[in-house]
Amino acid sequence: MKHQIRDIALSASGIMKIEWVKKNMPLLQRLEDEFVKTKPFAGKKITVSVHLEAKTARLALLLAAGGAEVCVTGSNSLSTQDDVAAGLVASGISVFAWYDATPEEYNRHIEMSLEFAPDLIIDDGGDLINLLHTKRQDLMVNVIGGCEETTTGIIRLKAMEAEGLLKFPMMAVNNAYCKYLFDNRYGTGQSVWDGINRTTNLIVAGKDVVVVGYGWCGKGIAMRAKGLGASVIVCEIDPVKAAEAVMDGYKVMPMSEAAKRGDIFVTVTGCSDVITKEHFAVMKDGVLLSNAGHFNCEVSVTDLVAVATEIKDFRQNIKGYKMPQGHWVFLLAEGKLVNLASGDGHPAEIMDMSFAIQALSAEYVAKHGKDLKNQVIDIPADIDKRVAMMKLDAWGIAIDKLTPAQEKYLSSWNE
Image (cartoon, rainbow, N blue to C red; front, side, top):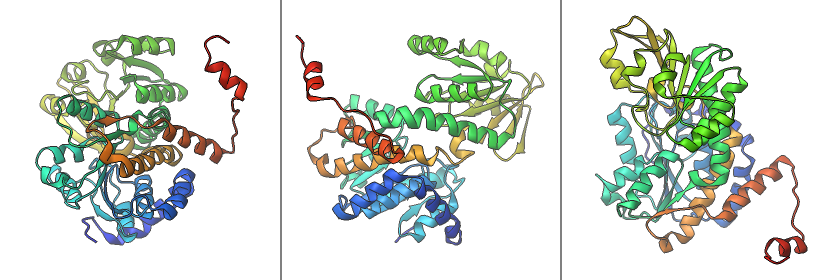
């Protein structure tokens, strides 16, 4: 077994973390009980590039229980937890990742994970896909297909599909109801504030929080900020989402205005250069800037560095930039994903649903991938419903069923 991690001696701590989330991810345990018997991935190799922390480790071990040979790498240099990486290696999984990797190290780890020659890939943001379709097309020879975890990754896949460049089918896991309605909204909503609060040790109540982007992640972040006592401002480019934010009780305004009012900023757009030098110039002294979109380009670090008269580390994962006007702005986690770079990511119970979708989608690709077109594939409705029913069952909750007469009524036009 090949691996490249910081220190295998950290494995005991990592195994403890994995065991903790295992106790709080009952859906994956049910799937493991099933996969141990059915072995849906027997003879298959799977490369996983997802934020390398304990929940991802649990997914990797589930895939291995299903008969796969598994290789894991990170999808963000600051979200990899070295003890979890060591715990996975100790559990028989190949790992190429470590915390705070340089861009060169990060890219090399991605490449090494693909030199594993996978049949299936599970990606988070599209870095595996990008490398396979650019510099290392030779490594896609065995690839049947894969799954994509995030909004950003699916945007990139859709662009490739539109240009006819996508070379194998990819399941749009992020677009499953049991992913975005729960992971994006409740998972991001809680974990972003976990990360911000842990990093800053400051109060949220009474502050003006600016949420940039009102998709499902933005909705969750705004909802939790409101619950913590903040006044919430939303910035949007979509008139429908902006109208929704107004009716949800938030103020809506352009970034040029919000920049003057905000105390805490959270970008979650998937776009670049959302907060730039003209915004930094008019901000209050001491504002906190953070990002919950996939890449660290939403808050322009380039502009911060270019205009700052002084740059100083104030606390772990808090870097201050003094503006020419005399005020300081503080960037959390280098503008990378604040909930993972400064925290442990989404709660285990949330990722239990998302990774159940991932595992069942991977099983679907393993069975049907050779018959699917080279495009972005929606998650079959029966997978979504199965995960929802498994979750309700884990909670001990029963729901009603239609009677035959009701089914007839709902399917008729002349009743």
